[in-house]
Image (cartoon, rainbow, N blue to C red; front, side, top):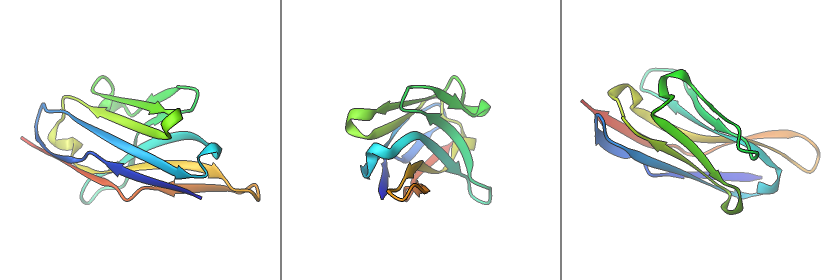
Length: 120
């Protein structure tokens, strides 16, 4: 199994910055892509950014140029640098990944989430 733990959330004013971290443990050798999702109050969870173990990155249009996703494969960690924060970035940010179990099944793992609050 893979366990994910996020940290780094907090409250900032618009225009501020935060760095979120996601630490993976367990069967980390079977992880490929890792992603950040967020869920605003009353809204569906949405994909924010993805990074593969090869370094390919994908961002949702609303965060391009403001957020940067990075990954440290040696430390089994993923980071999300949030710059130029806007009130609409408020939400709970979740770390996500898929991993293969010994029986060949593909499994999904989620962290518990870390709250980001941006005030205007």
